[in-house]
Length: 249
Image (spheres, rainbow, N blue to C red):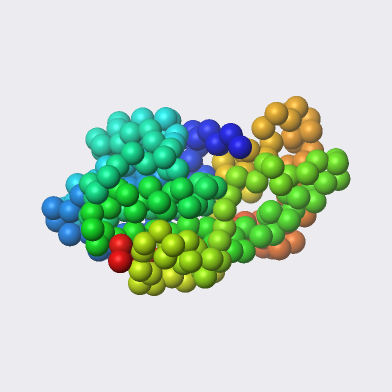
């Protein structure tokens, strides 16, 4: 499946909450001055910069050339790399990732690449969408497309695992799991729900004509409004996060 294209400015407007809510993952990483850390799915580099501020050397990688350009423009070291094809070998003390692994739909290839990139005993600390993440939105998208005879399964861009499933994948790749948990996190949206769809669910609408896209968007909004929009018009997405820390055994 084609990866979504990212607009850094649009992401900063609609997804500013993502790095803000990722700060506890930086705390879990607990970077030490002098460490060399890989930020997997670094985006525009907001959290990379925070790790650098704490004294570590950070290399950011992301599949989006636009996001990497934004990170480089901010003075960070970053390069365009497919998360399922990491080229590094025993280079890093830790691999960090926030809100990116669920966009990488070949998890075993990603985890294997992380294991190769780490020095012996290196740690892997991350947060991603977990089982049940944006469930109501996913159901609404499925229903709105089904009304038009379209199966959305091939369009689904996300991988939201349960903790035991992801822990098994980590162990199979040689990691010892220090902690792993699902964290329900209803997340207020800074913009409209339509803006969230345009930023995070764009792959569903790729190839549709504008009229069909607008009609499906309106259906999705109508379906989720009773559950995600309060009486004052404030939208909250039904986020569930999977947070974990592991190290090479």
